[in-house]
Amino acid sequence: MLIWVLFKMALRSLVTHKLRTFLTALGIIIGVASVISMISIGEGARLQTLNTISKFGTNIISIKPGQQKSRHVTTGKVDTLTLDDANFIENNTPLITGVAAQVYRSSQLKFENKNTNTTVRGTGPSYARVANFTLDRGRYFNDEEVRSAQRVCVVGSTVLKNIFEGINPLGKTIKVDGKNFLVIGVTASKGALSWFDPDDQIFIPVTTAQKRVFGMKHIQSIDVQAAKIEDLEIIKEDISRFLRQRHNILEGQEDDFYVQNSSEFLNSWGNAAKTFTYLLGGIAGISLMVGGIGIMNIMLVSVTERTREIGIRKAIGAKKKEILQQFLIESVLISFLGGGIGILLGIAISRIVSNIGGWETIVSTQSIILAFGFSVMIGVFFGFYPANKAANLNPIDALRYE
Amino acid sequence: MIEVERLAKIYQIGEQKVTALAGVDFSIDKGEFVAIMGPSGSGKSTLMNLLGCLDLPSSGVYRLENLDIQGLKADQLAEVRNRRIGFVFQNFNLLPRATAQENTELPLLYGRVPNASQIALEALERVGLSHRAKHKPTELSGGERQRVAIARALVNRPAIILADEPTGNLDSITGAEIMKLFHDLNRESVTLILVTHEPEIAQQAKRIIQMRDGKIVSDEINVVMPC
Image 1 (cartoon, each protein chain N blue to C red):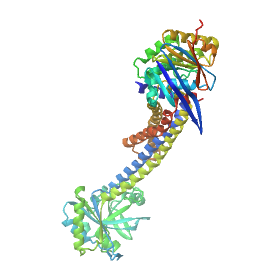
Image 2: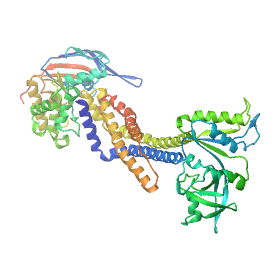
Image 3: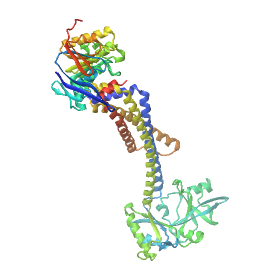
Image 4: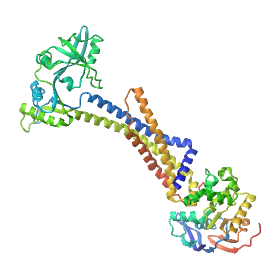
């Protein structure tokens, strides 16, 4: 077959100019390798973040007090949610498995002579389940302790590390804003996000927090856990209706609370991370383009160098198409070669980044197909102009070319 | 086999029109051995390009094996060159990186003729070079290279072989050998057209066409001296 012969000829000409072929392919190698490694790093970062975020639970609806606006002027009320609201939601909303009202504030902890600042979170007994905390030691406080506003607390693992330093905290007494609390449990570590460490907090009964520590009547947040993710929207609507009723909000007036679905948060985070990945991939794609220009450059040189060869081929009967094919095969071969080596290099780079940076990377099949397909397309695209130039040479001039 | 009527080629160089070929008429029959002679600028190269279907005339008629060449498109011309014309050039024009056999095969490949390597080998045998089939042009002597070029010209059984100063780059002994090969081929009724400015070479043809200023000044039968 002629195409096979053309392929062999192209291969021979590439082998003859080994260094030139390699340098030309290098542009594509670097381009493909950077596309693959950048996307793998971006994807790794995205999944790692999402994994950590989803540890907080994905089937959570979070209610926050909102600012009531009248005639676009904010009237600054942020104490619209009460413990009664939470109880009402818990008792009247179908399809839910838990409600956790919360108040929180940064406070000083003291154990013996050690101090630390941490978030003190007042919650109910179902908070551990709703927020996806498991207990490492001891127990969580129960309904009775919440009802009677007992001074008991459960500490996070970061707090444990900061002030107990290897001492078993169970049964010990710590001071929260100067008041004594009995430690009854320790939560298992969830791992920190860059902006927030869920293990750096202690949990106390919400009633205790309101009456004895913070001195407030309202609550700052209600987390509602849905039995199934599919029901999140219905539950959201129910909650909005209940709260509008209870807060006496008339039709046409805006809510004095926010209801947010955790999977929405997760989605928006995921999208932001995706954009980051695309950005990285796009920048890497530019280097692939530059590699393509390198191919075009070398192919133009090659066409000029081989003007006489083209003349000979035309004189003995090569048609335009056949000359075009020959040179296109060469440029595509270069980009194929570059793409292949680039994939291996890209995988190697993301492995190295994983090992050295301790950063998870994910080499996806899609990114490999994308980068490889793109590089072959670049071979065709940037090879076409030189190949066309060769195909359109006048045989007489080409034969005379010195 | 070849019929040429009022064939003319006019080049436009800037604003100036240069008449390279001013309307020539002749015909060549199968099995002829024709030498086209003339000083440089006489139009013989232009005529050679036209006869070789490398270029199209500005006016006039060129019929090759009853096929009208004027008016053909580039790819059709390529096909005519491939099937009906064999070229032999002064500077051999072989592909430097291909072996003798691969060079000889090339017209067959472009013509999509099956069994190319076998036919190519036979053509090389005909010019006495089958033992050098696997050698590249750089490993061959000038005479051997020209033999490869002749094998390549022959391999597609063309209607005519056009040789442009085929001995110009060879010493006289090798040149004589190449001319002997042409005689042998002509005896096997291959039609030969030889373009040269060397009278000694032209004298070996059976017919000599003399050109000057784009016109034919003489067209005579030549009595071939035994060589």
